[in-house]
Length: 498
Ligand code: GLU
Image (cartoon, rainbow, N blue to C red; front, side, top):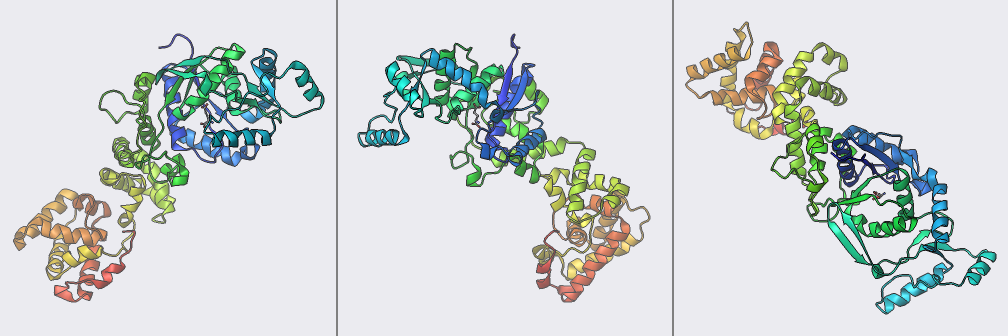
């Protein structure tokens, strides 16, 4: 446990969605705060006014809430803080740590082209760094526009990164960068330093693409005489083709994963494993456990690859461990939205839904699979899988179904043990293995050749429905050419949902 209070932040730009990379960095910040009894805050970096629209910001909050990333204070909006940077810029100017640069855009562009042609470093020439006071006064008098640049001292700069250790850079590699534009607005590096300072941020945990910014920011902190926070630069998430994950390349954002049936707790666990590991081989690590064991020391330097298979495997594990009633409550509106049933029907048949959930649980990698795999529990107007129908719905299959119907009709108590016994009895009488009967019955009652235990399905849908569906299958076989219906051409029209 740290002795001083930990305060960390996530600083998304308004994009209209929560990028998985930002979400993963938010997960690290959140876990670090919770592990240390510290605070996690949000800062919206919306200085680009065009982007400061609620519809570009709200989805970020919504996705964070969905992931369970609760923040401890009202979010800060950079756009509302524009005036706060000015006194610091004045202080830097007054202290000689910054200077006014009167170079025009054209001059800078020309210098850049020349440097490129000469293969020289593309840095600012420091032309205005040593302008005599009278010249500065004269230009100010003429109201010539100017930007403000930080005067980088000679020597080298080091900072201790909690992930990368001490990193050192020669100051010749850091240009006298602009901290304030000619329109008076502070640039990103300036705003971040002041915001982090005023927000009391103790640890800056962000993507390693910000390391070069950190050197610049360290110079601002030093020039202003401010305490420098700890920095931890975490690895970037890569696609299997080693490119950075990006919406532009078709990668999904957090809300899309939710829509595709990924549980928030599974995504949270998965994101945490992107660039961090518990240093043993565990992967299923629920949130509470992660809060206990999360250490920045265990963040890796190497950029991790986003492996969607692993996400699905974890999701399945979370589905398996979730109580049936919780899954039922989540699945019910999905079934209604899919048009399988109504809210009212489900409310009076909750036990039926619970049975379905319990049966399908082991077979669902996504929450949406509960919908895709359950339609025959709500409808009997499905078609038959053509391949399975070709194989099972022939003369022999028809006879098996007829014998089974006769036996099932005699049953009063239609429970799975009894159904199983009855099917075994028929199989024995016919001198065939039980599998020979199970397959055509499964196809008759569900339209597909795989699914939960057949006897569970039959008990759940009940005797009347079972008999009705088997009769329908017998008729189907007969309509296809009776006893030796080898082909089921029309079966190809089967309902795709089944
Ligand atoms: N808005 C920056 C980003 O999204 C935040 C950088 C930082 O955390 O300082 O990359």
